[in-house]
Every structure is written in structure tokens, then in C-alpha cells.
Image 1 (cartoon, rainbow, N blue to C red):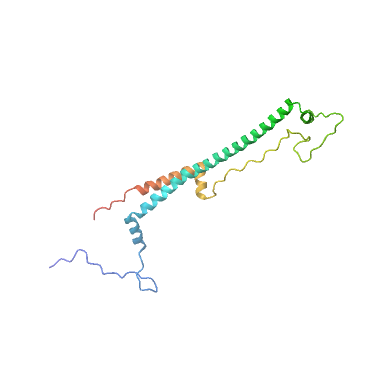
Image 2 (image 1 turned 30 degrees about the vertical axis):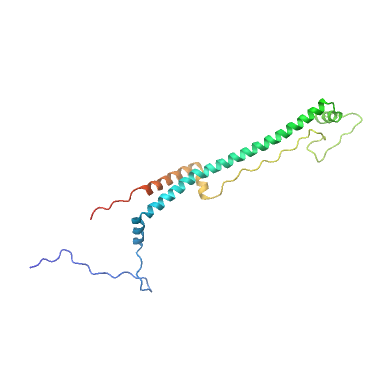
Length: 188
């Protein structure tokens, strides 16, 4: 008597179809298997991890460079104003040394609050001080504001000290996962 087969063959099952169409429905797991088998998934994770790593490094460096440029521009503007003030002081000192009577009277009026008896005080309503003098200082303009960092989630994450560490750790983890070799399947 012949022995029955150990595993009887299973009857073929029909492929699932979309309602209203005769075409078979694509299996979502087959697309995932195709993505995993081709290694494209690992490349996507690797490139996204590298992009986040670059952003976490380059955005703070760009922000630091912008701040340094702002401090440099502010220092150059201050130096230019101080050199202009120094030239004005030298011109005033030269006028005092030459004995210019107008300059001496203006200095006595502005610095010592003294005026000769035969003269009256002239108020300078438009000027910076009470007396019109060659040494009148002009108020310095407000320095320009530093360049603001772009307001994006990536910029906020990469510029905040503790969030930046998490961003670096996550991007390095993504790079590690992207570099791992594919899992070997056990032989069937």
C-alpha cells in the first residue's frame, strides 16, 4: 500500500483584486521587500544621516561667521568714528595753539561756562549741546543689528546647545544604520 504524501499540495489561491477592477492589488510588503533587497533603504538612511550631520555642523559655523562679521563691521565703524573725532580734536588743538580768538571764546563758553561781559549766550537749538562750538560731538548712530539666523526647525535644533547634541547623535545613528551590512538570511 502506497504511503500518503507527507504534505498534500495546497490548492492555488486567487490573487486579491481591487474592488471594481480586474487588476490584482499590489502587495505592500512586496514593495518594502524590493526596497530592502535593493539596498535603497540603507542608502536613504545613510544620506539623510549625512545631511543632518552636515547641517548640525555647518549651520552653527555659518551663524558664528555672521556674528564675527557683524562684530568686525561694528569695530570698523567705531574705529572710523574715533579717527574722525581724533581729527576734530587735532584741528581744535591746532586752533588753540595758533591763538584763534574765536576758538578760545568757544572753548571758554562750552567747557568753562564763561562768556565775556559784552557778549550774550547763543543757544544752539539744533545742535547737540547748549553752546555752539567746533568741538560739539555728534551722537553716534545705533550700530546695525546682527544677522538673524533663519527661523527653521533645523536651524533651531542645530543652534540650541542641548538640541544640537541630540541632532548629532541621531544623525550618527542614521549613518551607522545606513552603513550596516544587510542581514544574512539563514539557509532554508
